[in-house]
Length: 557
Image (cartoon, one colour):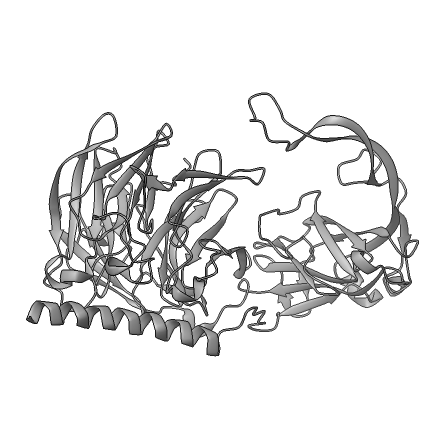
C-alpha cells in the first residue's frame, strides 16, 4: 500500500510540474522576442555623408532585371529515388533575376550614388528588385573607440525586404530569419562583419532590395530606410546577470584538467518551456527541442539569436491538447548532415532528407508502436540507437494507447529495427565510450524512482547488439524525486550525466570527479562550437554553457 501511494505521489508531482510549465509558458512567454541588450560603443550612419566618411563607405545601385529562361520541371535522378525533386523533367519556361551574386558581370551596371540619395526610389515598381552595394573599410578609430578587436555589425532596413551578402557570401540555414536572409517586412536585417575587427579590413556588402508583399504588390518602389555599422568594444552585448551563473564542485583533482578551475558557467538563452535533446549542427549552430511546445529551436552563437527551426516537430494529432510533451526530444545529425528526430507524439524516429522528404526510420517493433522515443545516439558506422520510455504519452505507463509491455533500447541498422535491451524500466540518456566498446544508458523509472537511479554500461558486440549490461554507477543515494536524464562522454571517456542536482562528472572507471550546478537542472547536453569544447546544457526554461578542455566528438564526424 505504501509503495502504491508513493507511485501515485510521484505521478502527481510529475503531472503538476508539466501542468505548471505549460501554464507558465502560456501566461508569460512570448512567441517572438527581439531584445536589444545594450547600445553599441560607436556608430557609423551610412545614410549620411559624415557617417559614410568614417568608414570610407561608397554606395552603388543597379537594377536586378527579371528575365525569362529555360528550366526543367521536377523529376527524379539516378540513385536518388523515384520522387520528382530535381530539375530533370520536361523543358519549361520560367523567370530569374540578373545579375546574381557570383555572375561575372555582377558589378558591370552599378552606378555610384551619394549616401543622402538612398531614399530616392529605385526599381521599376510593382514586381521589382534592386541591387545596392556598399564598399567600406574599418578605420583605426571611430568616435573614441579604437576598432581593433571590436565587433562590427552591418544593419540595414530596406523598404520592403532585403537579403545581404558579405564579400560574396551569405549564411544560409533552415529556419533562419534575418542574418542576411529576409528578416521581415520593413524590418532591420543585421549581419556580423567581424568579431575581431582590424584597421584597414575591407568589406564589400551587396544588398538585394525586394518590393512587396509579393502576394499583393504595392504601387511603390524600393528605397533604404536606414543603414549603419554598429561597433561593440567587447563583442555583442549579453545580459550581465547571465555571466558566471552556477557553480562547479570539484570532488577529485582530476576534474581540474577537464574543466579549468574558475571556469564560468553562462546562460545564453531563456524563455522556453522545457528544453531537451540538443545537437550541434555542422553549419555552426545549436539545435534543441522543446517537447512541451512541439518545437525545435536554433541558437546561433555568432549573434546570440534564437529562432524557431521547426514547429510541430513531434506531433500534429487533433488530440494534442491531451499531451504534456508531444514534441520532438532527442536529436542527432548523421554524416550527410541530415537531422534525425525522436518524436514523442508520433511515436517514431524520423530523418529529414536534404531535399525535404521525411523518412520514417522506426515506428514499431513486431507490429507494435513504440512508446515515445526519447534520446538518440549514432555509432560511427551510422547505426542508430534510441531509448523508448512512455513519458511522451499522456498517461505514461498507464496510457491506453501504450502497446509495448516494456521500455527498451533499440537499434536501427541497415533498415532493420532490433531491441537490444529490456533491462531498464525507464531507459533515457545514451552515449558511447570514445572507442565505442561500451554503450552507457541512464534510467528514470517513475514507478520506483528512489531505488532505480542507475547508470548502466553495456559491451557492444561487432554486430552492434549489446551484452553484459551492468550498473556502472548508482545515484539512488540522492534524495530528489528525480532520476537520470541525458548524458555525454568526452574524448577521454569521462561521463557527464544529468542526475539530481546537476551534471555529475564520472571518470571512465566510475569514479565521481565533480558536479556542474546551474540554476535549473540540465536535462541534456551537447558538445558545441567549432572545437567541440563547449558543453551546452538544456535546462528547463533556459540554455547554459561551460567550456570543457577535453571536449567531445560530434555525431556527424
